[in-house]
Length: 144
Image (tube, rainbow, N blue to C red; front, side, top):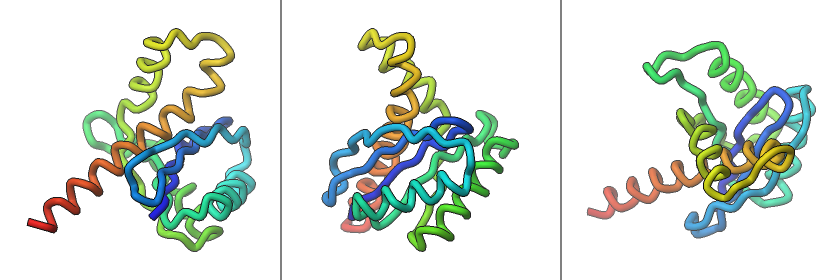
């Protein structure tokens, strides 16, 4: 099944999608939209275009495991996306994904405006890779 990951942001939202085998997570791009309702519709359009069966939205839980205002905002956005797509929407712990994305971009020497344009997409790809790894381990555990 194809799965889409969303790194929700106030101005820019990163999108990544995996292949049907759930092996390869690929960056799709960044959607620049501040209105959550319009953004949810744009994500619904992308979900349809990429024929995804599930959407994973990054859930920025605090490092101590508590849920703060940003995580609550993401949860409300996930409910909005679920209502317009009618797909299964799952929240996925995204602690440190943006930091990890900046690390990748540092390693590849991506700077300035170019960095700003891709960091959310890289974060979405990291979220999706983490979720796919979890699903793969779960499948392997089920087959034992």
